[in-house]
Image (tube, rainbow, N blue to C red):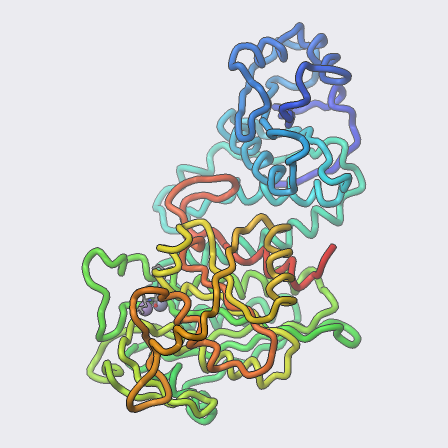
Length: 492
Ligand code: BES
Ligand code: MN
Ligand code: ZN
């Protein structure tokens, strides 16, 4: 599928379907749209009347035309109130239009949408992102692809000539989101720690990044006892991934992005039982997937920040060699951990990954992790938890997330709750009481970061969706990639 930015007036465009974004206050029809209506013998007004189209956000309608213009079908997508319109409104509108065109078997789609925030570049990027992400379907594991038959081949963004560089930005970002979606959707017999390392290798080779993959022995030498405790029972060797993007010239900032990379989480000897969602635990590398997706996008967008992409990838399994509940592990910063629950494994892998990240001397660390079911209980499936004691960094991530249209909600790092992690025999336990479970998880991670500004993102809910919604399709969502890229690019 290809995007074309053009300044052709919509009356002169020819193709299969023209879809127009209409806000609630764009009715009754005036100007060009009134002219279009008369050219198509009033069919546009008929369509509006037939379905009582009011421009409500998310509403769609389409009709066949009998001539008068160069396209066969005319569609509408509602944008809600124009003063509430954001880039996210346009992403969703473009997604709705692309889905409609696909259903109508229209190969050439013309999109006529208003410019948001007086910013044609932002508008073009948002439209391209929404349409491309909505049209991405993953049929890698189907014997027959029932989705690919009718395809939208060309999307013409009308009134957005000269926005080619925004289209390239959108393409790079979507490449990253789609990579993350496919990594999350693939099962644990396909995506292993080795596959994650290989994916990092592919990105490094394609875009000239530096890659270091630490094998088990090297992690042992660095004292990564927490991480290796988790990896111990698996037949698959752990892979500690460290991918580095270095800009040309002196970097303005040095950043680290750390992703939880559990390619499968059985729970370990505290094994997840029936009804626990164990069959979904292939998604437990959603943080690492977002990290790799962001790397793929950032490698193409070439911002002036140096970025370290890190994941302590492993599989949490059971065997005669498994860590036992009650075992004491020593992390690479020397702290000792009593593992009172082997299913709280993500924080053990992140402990050593955060220590490694801080040793790089970066200005900020952001980690993403499908860390706790408790975060899903608190915020539901669509919103991720944001934890930080650094106002500036928390603000920068929140701003980036808002621009990206990804939802985060700040949760407190209530120091008193660390009492729940007190251990009689070691420096701390890895698991606290059930109440406030995502907060104690964040407080556990805090023991492994000293002074570097740090944000922890608990993305357990939004990395996966069961339903089609906006530009997401059922499966992995690629959540986090767009926020990370926006953060690294900086305020636009
Ligand atoms: N990977 C899970 C968290 C999770 C749950 C992610 C559901 C996505 C969907 C994590 O390793 C885990 O098992 N957490 C436990 C922690 C508990 C043992 C303290 C949980 O949330 O139940
Ligand atoms: Mn677990
Ligand atoms: Zn886990």
